[in-house]
Length: 340
Image (tube, rainbow, N blue to C red; front, side, top):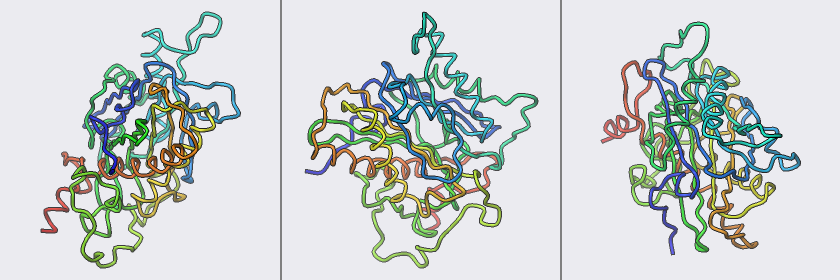
């Protein structure tokens, strides 16, 4: 029986998670915060050559902190690392965090992407706005949230098309839910050449990113390596950020393996991925709300589906992007129209 998405086809189909976005149209940048209603087991894995992160060392299985309160994805390159401080402040105000001798310290790892040269006004004065955007994103967290040109995907770009914020979910045969969120700002392309067909087409459920499927014949030069700003690509000027989540009961080491497996979705949805010019990173979250601890075969299903659901989330992010004033790249719907 084919797998089905959860009721929202969003990261929040994993019970216990909420997502909030905050962004600025003039800035062409923004922040996405994922809030854990209860502290969740977490880990991460980096495969890009130029990551920008905060508090990721604690996510390694050999380190002592088992659970976290939130994750933050932000635009703004290194300036965007301020966003986690804003989200952390919002959680502290709400009484959430890791208690140390009566002091609440919210644990909020974060990662950033480069959206500084996308046509937005980055002349923000002495201090960047990301701390305030992070605070607003945390306060906006809900089970329903928009995709495309929102949050950390607000100013995202790929090779030839605007990127965006995407999400998807699936319910496995044992009842476990796995879901993904992606802020797609890759140096590579999510479509086959300059066609509207997504590399992730074999994993699409229904028409969640256009329903075009695979072309009858591969478009001419579809395997050419298309790069964003080919003459200007430098380390750190791109990056796709992902979050893979499940309601299964996992150890921290299991969560690390889940993050590793979810990177398969990058390779299935973006050509090329994991380059020296990308900071490609996946965070993993396990809420345990299903009460199900996967056995060996169920674990294989979970890790396999992690790649599939991440590929779908990436394609949905690009598919959902909308045109805005000052854009320097078209959106997918414009490419679709031009192909007909």
